[in-house]
Image 1 (spheres, rainbow, N blue to C red):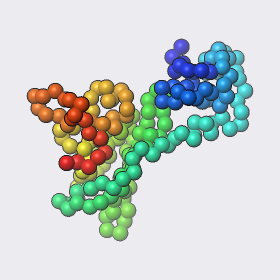
Image 2 (image 1 turned 135 degrees about the vertical axis):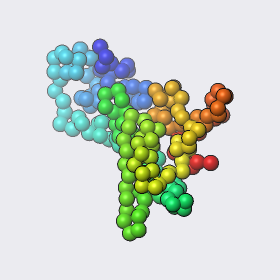
Image 3 (image 1 turned 180 degrees about the vertical axis):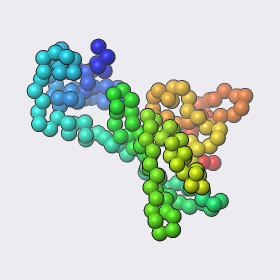
Image 4 (image 1 turned 90 degrees about the vertical axis):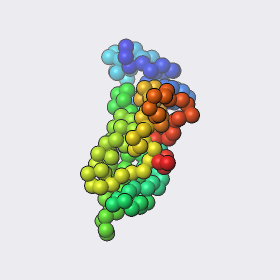
Length: 181
């Protein structure tokens, strides 16, 4: 059955990310029998009143909160960049990135969501660049891209600096949201 993720209990509480959890995320208890779990399609289990709070405690998880340089009209300016892991939609994670900049006296927040941080940055850039803004982070460089393994694991928080005609090496890995060099 595609619902088991391994671990004790019904398997929904323990995962590679949280191996120490021994309780069901849906039930907030360790009923211990996947065949009795309502998701498994068997006999229903009564859930305590606050069962959703177990999942809500973990998300959104702030991953990045830092100042970055944004280029506007060839002039650099400092802005705040934040990135979160908002949760999961089934097996797919949901990342959100937000950049807050000022135009005159107005604060302009730009926000994008995607299944990984690199794609969220690409979507954020699609909003910024028509307004004449370029964010100066490693993931915005033309010569950076995440590997296939980074796509599947790690939320594309790291990208390779690519050189034409050469294979990417571990030394070429950089953090997606670090300052561009």
